[in-house]
Image 1 (cartoon, one colour):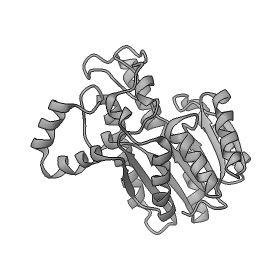
Image 2 (cartoon, rainbow, N blue to C red; image 1 turned 30 degrees about the vertical axis):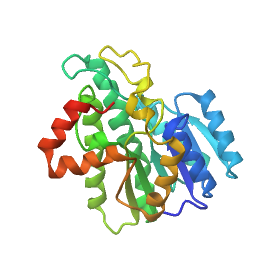
Image 3 (cartoon, rainbow, N blue to C red; image 1 turned 60 degrees about the vertical axis):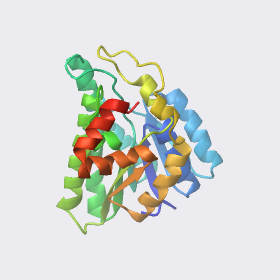
Image 4 (cartoon, rainbow, N blue to C red; image 1 turned 135 degrees about the vertical axis):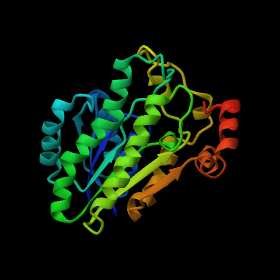
Length: 264
């Protein structure tokens, strides 16, 4: 969907890919509503969107607070008038072993990375179907395509998002609602710094792979054509994205490389 003149609601917009995508969409002519838990930091994103020449506003949102989501969706609709594009970017990372990660930590990852996104989509999409037009854009990642050490619950949540979105897309083909998965590789964001360890404490540092990655702004620029064209899925990144294809055609070799080099 061409974002020019459209109303876009973006989650996870205080920093990283979410903030960069909000600004890129604003530059493309979209009216933006940006959300995350941190309302104070959202004002910086609003200012950046306005500098790009678009109307912009903010709405505080915690995807882990399921009870609040219906009310937030109503607020978003009142603010925008209607939601043409829902861009679900918010997520929390993981740096903990599968068997050591506390259940509360695992559940929080799923609440934010899967359930929160899905429930928000389920609240917003019916109006799009009723109008016969709209778009759901979901940012996942290459770990939605394969698993890796110390990323078990994060990877599982992203795999679940791929399965849900792929199924949703096929349930009503031709209904005018596009479902686009953006699949970044290494991007220099704060996600690894805020990723949760076994007990829920922040990881506290950027992984080496991310340090070598593309900028959030580059990721957003490369995302825009996929959104505009309504592509089902778009890989975005560098050589690390090749792991998706290698795992598909030569999984044994890919596993050896992953164990030897890791993904950090």
